[in-house]
Image (tube, rainbow, N blue to C red; front, side, top):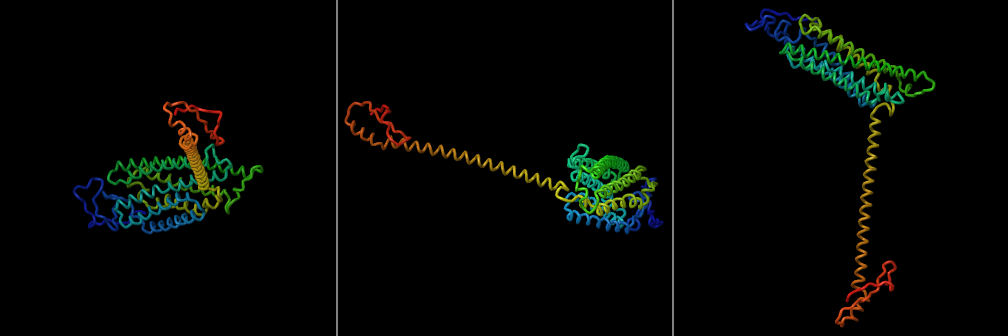
Length: 402
């Protein structure tokens, strides 16, 4: 949308400090500033109706994704919900900006959320293909990479592209330094270039997986009932992935071409609002709606359709192993205690037997009375008490001085 506001002589004030390339102009209706103004943020008059309309659209598809995540029990769908929520937040701030067009805060929040939201949608596609590898392939590997590592690898690459784009977007949102803005735009374009490179690699692997499944389906020796599970053919999920990747690619090409000419007011992409709606807002909306219509949960069904069940089984096994280890430790502790008690009991029993012989023996008492009047000590032999059969052994003696 081209600027429609007109600048009258009464609303224009040129200060003596104005530079040769811009003018200090008082804001017009809704804070509008023309491109030639020194403090201009937008080079067009933003549409309030379009901003509100896309708030409704993104709100509806995000809400539906939340419902489908619960319905199909796909916990990882929070990623695509974040993508829709960020698009919604972007247009909420855009709506506010249409009423305060010279508010830098609204513009900064709009730019950040609008530029970074597709990263979430991209990550959801990566995670979906990883679960497709886990679900369809018997060995759960593609080109030697396990399904779980496949998703982690591409999500990490996506996070790296996200960080680069976020750094560029933050620098580009600085309205006070023109050179810093250009640096930020270059960093941002590098980030989306990386994102597109990762998308192309990902698309090649998706085609590889699709060819494997076609071969499995046509082979009589290999039967996989998962290929016929669910109300939709497994092919539709690939079509949805390819379409969403295509929409993201269109958006990336648009962003690169938009910022390739810088932030000059002569750049037609920056002076017409409809470019952002047609080549960014609409493609991302179509990608989200397509994933609503052909949701992964409609094809990937069953206990082996995701990593949650695998993690749950691993947790149960780990818990059982921990319980067994604890029981073994308790048993060892109990055996040690029993052995200690047994030794203590044997020691106590030996002490009792010694007391019986030394103090309570009638033979000792008799011998003491018999030799109590003797003046000289002499060697006395005593019978030995045999503890094994409880009687005195007369054949064994020991010497005792009395």
